[in-house]
Image (cartoon, rainbow, N blue to C red; front, side):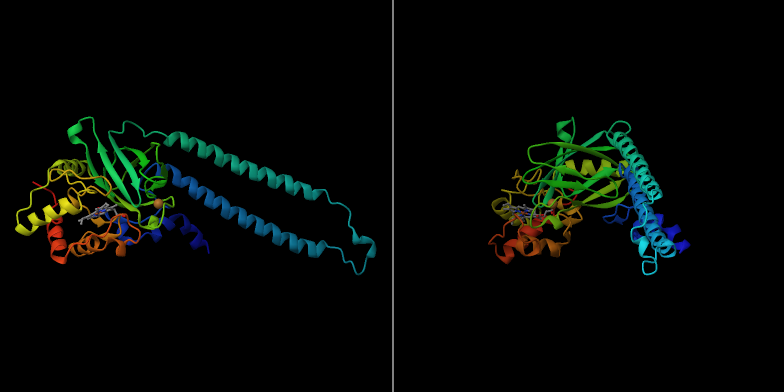
Length: 348
Ligand code: HEC
Ligand SMILES: [Cu+2]
């Protein structure tokens, strides 16, 4: 028993998949152990409340048991002594009630003060946050815009958010349709994305890795499939990734990919933009450098040629209710579009 109790604070470490321990590995939705701020400041409160709750249950259970047993020993035997049917008031019982009230107030006051101090502490990052990312929630994907004072360095991507480790990043959060909520539990708490309003948040990832996030406010049929990934990498890798995003995509070389590009322009560009290749709409995710993303459809599918084919042929079968329509293209036409999409890698 003692062993079990001693290990409970380490549950976070014990239960997380072993792979997550290695540097730069995938980390699942997990909030008992955090890898950055403000999660690092908030998680001790969670553990504190958990231990408090466990303590309350144990103490109450002990008191109830004590009450039961003490009562049997001291209790009145009504069969033998009819006079004692209503025992005299025992005012000493009040001591227990006042004691309990005081203990509750004291414990909760500690948590109120601790929570308020933590809230004040995490309102702003310690120091400058040099990077600002605007995120717009859509049913059911994340539009991600990297902002910069230098307009030529602004770009857009979707669903996968790269950040440098050790550097605070600010977020400006809004929604294009209904209320969503931005949540990457291993690094930060939730912030809602509300249509017509801009909320701000920040976080700093301290350990390289890929952290799974999730929309945390029910937003319709595919809410559960509105995942996101935070890729925390070294500042050098992050800068290289940003520079890569600014590269225009290479024009397709093969005949089939060229045909695919034309078909894309006709059938898909109304909703999808590809920087440097064609100006497109904003109804769907920006597909510039699509092949540099590891997943499709907001974390639903690994980004492989097979899944890409399946998705563009029949998005509604994979993600029922998705706002990407099925197009009436023939097999060869879809193959051509896929050949074009597969060229959207690092670029020149
Ligand atoms: C009416 C707008 C619309 C049209 C037309 C459209 N799409 Fe989409 N597309 C979307 C939306 C919305 C999503 C996001 C779906 C989701 O994740 O729920 C999406 C997602 C995608 C994705 C996944 C991107 C990612 O990073 O997850 C690909 C690839 C894609 N579309 C390709 C295409 C191709 C190819 C065509 C043309 C055959 C096309 N789309 C036509 C709206 C559209
Ligand atoms: Cu949602």
